[in-house]
Image (cartoon, rainbow, N blue to C red; front, side, top):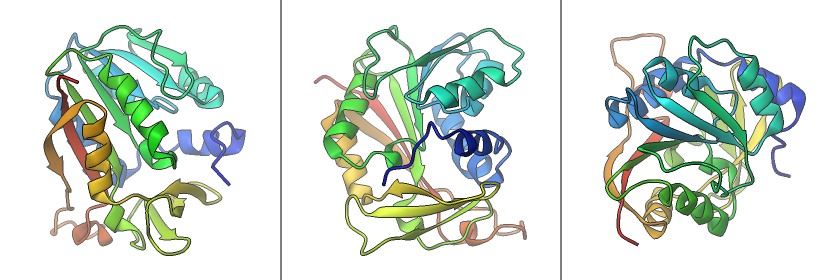
Length: 235
């Protein structure tokens, strides 16, 4: 059964994870670094959820088009305080960015892992591609395919069956009262789907934690996130 991202308790608990250390130190910080200076840029945050990353982009001076298919998640996002009015939250259908203007960059954080179907994944990526000028970036952050079975500070996961494309993954996040479901795909499949959607892959990062910081768990030896920077090419 797919995770229901309109389930009120799940969405509320997920929204309260704003300071999850694994996410920010080894995921979102890398996305920001790959985006570069975002001041005065228009950025699409596809699958923005409760808006934690959209708020960070806004604080850095970006104009953010924060879209999601979950009405409950967007309701949580709009409850959260922000010192800026430069975030536009919008409910969409999966892969439909028809109401979003042409932008300077886009991010997709921890979203593609929620989509089992490869064709739908391509629709989502292609919809983002169509909203970027030639040569502009999309940065994607996903749970690392090789991280299944590892225990990180902020989350852990395990497979339900043999790992193959579409295998259901049970995920336990720190701060959530119950597990939820993601879908696994191999690293090369991520690359293939990104390129099939009109992008050229520029950079791949698989960051590990600082060995000197003793609080980390498996982050020291296995990257928790796969981060891809891709540039819109000519379809």
